[in-house]
Figure 1 (tube, rainbow, N blue to C red):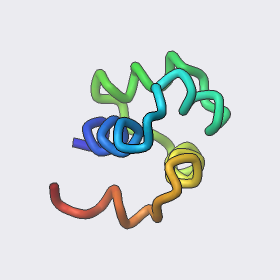
Figure 2: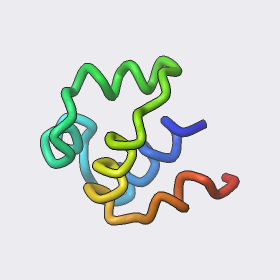
Figure 3: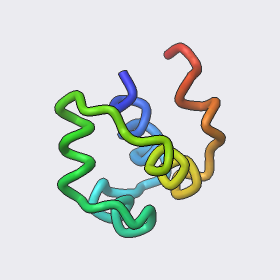
Length: 63
């Protein structure tokens, strides 16, 4: 699941979801929508990948 990959990478880097929301310039509530199953837009996925210093391919890889 996409949310699990976001959370795992943020945890590995010691970044809270709140801090990630600030770095990525995405509202904190939006991340909780993702946690509940909403799919991010391509624009937001790019912001998240940049904030977590990973390529978009990271989110495509199987866990």
